[in-house]
Length: 142
Image 1 (cartoon, rainbow, N blue to C red):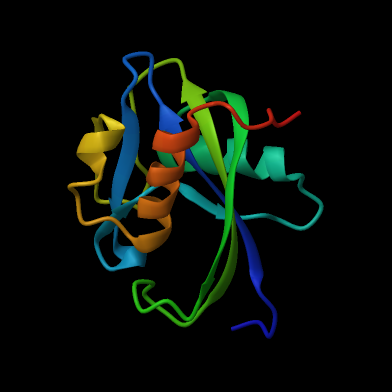
Image 2 (cartoon, helix red, strand yellow):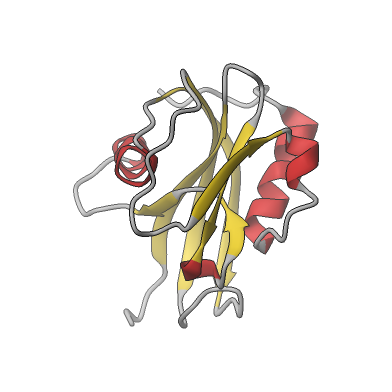
C-alpha cells in the first residue's frame, strides 16, 4: 500500500433512455457502484475516465460534467486498506450496450431514484444523490 492517497476517477453515466449505470463489484464487497479507477502517471483526468470506462464497460462517454470530490480513507466497504481521492463525474453514453471486464460481476440500467434502492457503496449513494439534485448543471470537463 502506498503511503499517499490514490487519485481515482469514476462517473455516473446516463443512457439515452435517461437511466443510470450501476455495477456490482467484488472490490467494494459486492455492493453496487459506478465504474472507475486510478489515474495513471502522465494521464489527464479526462483521459483516465474515458480509458477506465472503455476497459471496464466498453462504453464511450461524452458530455462530461464535474461531480463531487470525495475521499475514502480505510473504507470498510473496500476489499483492502486504501486511501482514495475520488474525482466524480456525470456523463452520457450513446448506448446501453455494456461489456464488463473482470472487475464487475453484474450491471444494470435503472432510474437514478431506483438505484437508491440497491445496496450501494457510500460514495456511489452520495454521487447519485448529487446527480438528483444537480443533474448536468455543473461545469463541463474540457
